[in-house]
Length: 221
Image 1 (tube, rainbow, N blue to C red):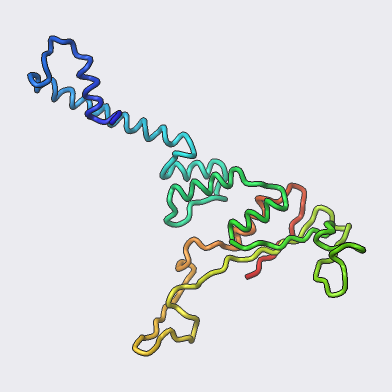
Image 2 (cartoon, rainbow, N blue to C red; image 1 turned 135 degrees about the horizontal axis):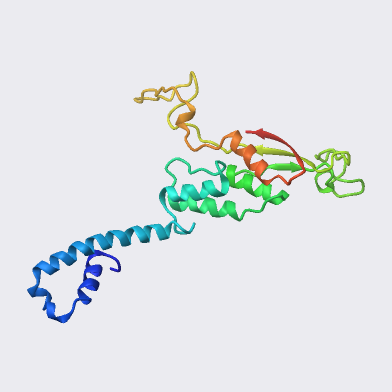
């Protein structure tokens, strides 16, 4: 294999003049060359590893975390036990994500929470309806529009749908059954590692908000 000890040894051996004799007759020289080849293979492995870290598509380990920090600071961190491949996909998605648009905000919140947010722009007839338009009428749900609120919108984001902690019910609720004792435990936020927090949702809204606009945000379950 290119760069391994045997490959480096063969290369070094090929540079020797013919008067050194055949490989089978030179055990001392062979040992010396193998020692040099071992060091050379180690240096080559360092070079190959360093070369991988120069590109997002091939970076690994902590170097991938450094790349994320260079582009996003603390806004994009590796989650608990997240693999390099999964983290790399998040970095690339965030790099080329649509921003400063309504669709971009919807998409980032969908990716983050798995649920579609509700966005209302008071100056947008499609959100509020209009006289003579298709979205106006008695009993038709909608929002009040106002031209006195330019460059503003209301966002209702939704927390991800959770499944709770397996085998642990709420306070005073038994999980036991016939021949099955009830399981009790004190749960904490540490029991739900990697969960999306409200701060993550607010940060996502701020990251996709156009400059010079005001976003009134609410988070619901």
